[in-house]
Length: 174
Image (tube, rainbow, N blue to C red):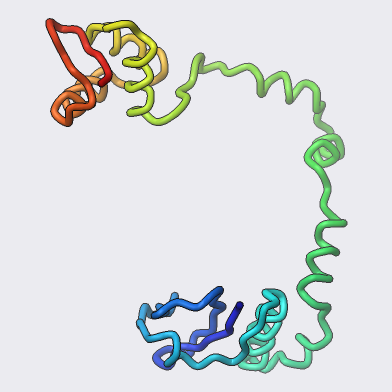
């Protein structure tokens, strides 16, 4: 279910999907019980709810007649989807060689790039390397763009949390 609701503090209109205990105005942040909010329409159709809200906003600005001349959201969405130019066509019409651009995209002049967050890379080093030393983990992560200081701090935190054990300079995931 969708509802078009209004804020009694700032007069903002918005859509709510479903039914929660309380609602918060996205503009001013006022919280009210759902039942206390002014509901202008409740419907099972999201497009209908959007139409009602858009119509109300247009009327507030004195543009109700202009809005009435527009097609529905569904029709407009279909029109937009049909008129979209794909990337390849756009590039060709701009005078660019698509194959050359694709080849350039596959080359990365910066060398290897990071895959995953810094923490994930440190954890992957612990999983991929067999009982690695701090130096081996730093090297592994460094090849993936993670700074040595970050690796050392992360290892220390993982050991303190009990996610990793360290014995005689070697680390192991638990």
